[in-house]
Length: 154
Ligand code: ATP
Image (cartoon, rainbow, N blue to C red; front, side, top):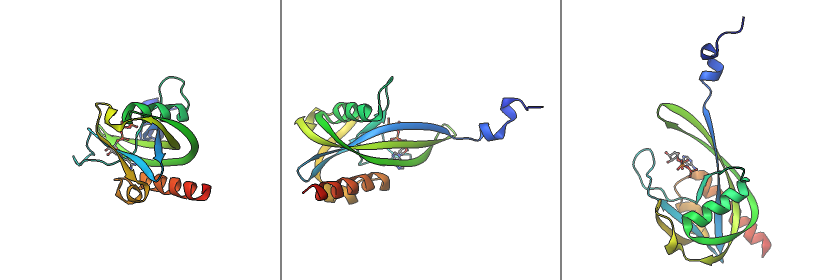
């Protein structure tokens, strides 16, 4: 007999899954880094890349572009996919397994001073510096990939 759903530990122990998309926005040798108003789980400031959840039937690339434009205040054009990062975190006692797809964007226009209110600061930073200064290893890796990609284009 099949056990009731709530007794199936393979289901109740499975983490919730979350997906977002984000961008490495480049102009010359610089990238946009952001400091979200929201702190990390220990209350520390985070230096990161713009990203967010998909809305409606958006593709990951469309969501990444919208999040870049909303969060940083600039408009940018999609260049290429960079890859995914994965991490997990806890929310209200539940483990969340998260994947974020990152894309490379070329800056088009606009000013990072026009970032949105969920962002404390949005700033241009040398790619080399961001590759070591961003808070999370996965995002540093995405900046590293952008650097390799841009170097091979030259
Ligand atoms: P989104 O920007 O996708 O809407 P969010 O603000 O809801 O996301 P996250 O930024 O994923 O949530 O943050 C959830 C938790 O995971 C926080 O504690 C955050 O500090 C941590 N976190 C965020 N990015 C990473 C990462 N690349 N590696 C490890 N932990 C991360």
